[in-house]
Amino acid sequence: MALNMDAIGKKIGPLTKAYTWKDCSLYALGVGAGFSDLDYCYEKDLKVIPSFSIAAVFDFLSHVGAASNVNLAGVLHGEQELVFHNPIPPEGELITEGAITAYYDKGKDKGALVVATCDTRHSNGQKLFTATATIFSRLDGGFGGPEAPSKHVVFPDRAPDFTVTETPAANQPLLYRLSGDIFQLHADPEFARMAGFEKPIMHGLCTHGFACRALIASLCPGQPELVRRFDGRFSKPLYPGVPIETRIWKTGDGKAVWRTVNAETGDVVIDMGVCEIGPVPRDEIRFDGRVAIVTGAGAGLGRTYALELARRGAAVVVNDLGSARDGSGAGSSSPADQVVAEILAAGGQAVANYDNVATAEGGASIVQTAVEAFGRVDIVINNAGILRDKSFARMTPENWNAVLAVHLNGAFHVTRPAFEIMKRQGYGRIVMTTSAAGLYGNFGQANYTAAKLALTGLMNTLKLEGQKYDIKVNTIAPVAASRLTEDILPPDLLEKLSPEYVAPMVMVLCSERCPVSGRIYNAGMGFFNRAAVVTGPGTVVGGGEQAPTVDDVAAAMDKISTLTDGKEYFQLNDQLGDVLAAFSAPAAKLGPKTKTTAGTR
Image (cartoon, rainbow, N blue to C red; front, side, top):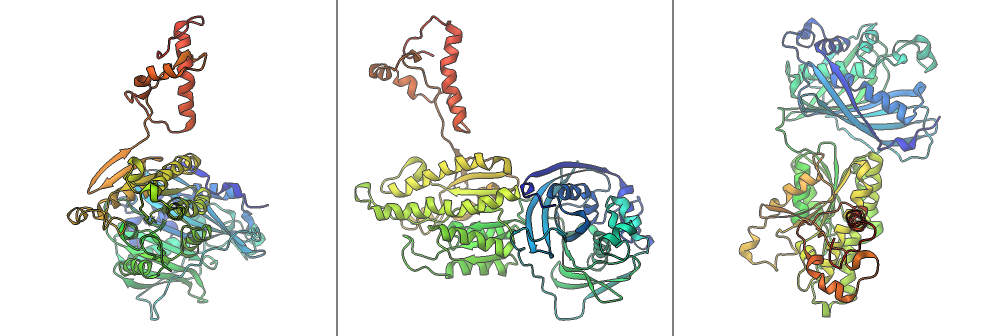
């Protein structure tokens, strides 16, 4: 057997699961609830344990196993991350969609990791939670894949603030499996021995449910709806009937780290636990679990994008070479470092990168920084730019090439390696930065305008190549104060052109909710509109049976030039279809022997 590499990024779902209060109560009993926490077991004012979400997506996990072709004899649940967007109602239907996002190779005889992410919505339309599962396949290592990114959770050097001790029943797996996880390892003694265990073991997710109950009881008693995030790594198997301790350390307002240990041996059963508690956030665009790259993020628009992404939950790679406005100088780490410091001080996640987007090596290094620090890439904002303005007659090849190298080539160098990752993940958002100067022209900026308009062409191809992978590519044309415009625009206008007025549109284009791909938007001072290439209806000149004469074309210029009833095309073939139709339609109407006169359709 071998892992199916073609499964990465392919959509799984939608998978639907109808459930009632009985399913919620059965799950609660399966993870040790009872009269001591009756709210989870009794239908009167029933509350749902947040970790019930895993029981709701067992079908998804089974599809992941089948699609990845893992050797089931060596499968264990490795890690589980849950981000909650709304409380889980006690009944209804759950709709889950997701994909396998990565394979990681631990080495021959050491196993492999299969990572999959899914979103689950309720039939009432609410997004309930995002689940990221890591399956540890002990028998599938050595396939030559990348190593898993490192993960660190810091535990305070002091005694836990809470320790909750419980003893799962000797028959606990038999009860828990009725919630849907019917893998033989937890019920069949012969299968368990074949897998290398003395007898059936506890479901890691069953112990996970015990831990979830312990965290709620300690951090927000009686309020499971306050759980916002719940992560953990399964580190050692546990046999049923063995007592466990869930040890909890508070690390800040609404934040805690935790681990569950075998109370008899002291072995850590679930490690690297993270829990976040707080009120249900308003229904806003969030980037929790997403990783973003922002180029040219040391100041101006890029800095604003990076700060806003981080505020909304993204982990951000802040790239800035730190050179002068025209791209000269040795560069400096200070601009990127300062933005990272701002993000970290606010409780966000960010790392700095100082590579030059103008080189292929620089672009690849920027993307590698994201992978090494955070394990994936979901968002790329190509914002880096320089100016070397000259009238066209005075434009030197050096100034021409330098500007194209940063704006156009830079977007290529960063986007290309990121695009490959996004394809494997089955998700991505890319934002190009054009300019009104590129769309409409501006005196003295031939190099800049050529590069900026070229980026819309790159977008038009990527929107097609990324379509089946849920990669959406759009372009922003910002009008905002930056170091590139500080001495171009008058001071009173600069005050009204804060980057904060542009950022909201960019956040929409970066988000899961982004409804479009291949669009261009102008943005500035709170005013937004869409720009597009519109093609007029045109006309057939010369009857289509012979080449038109110069006089024929000159006579038809009004009809050729009109944009009345014009339209947009999504791709080349759409426009070609209309060209061919312009010849076939008149023939059908006028008959095969009738010729059209010049200028008619």
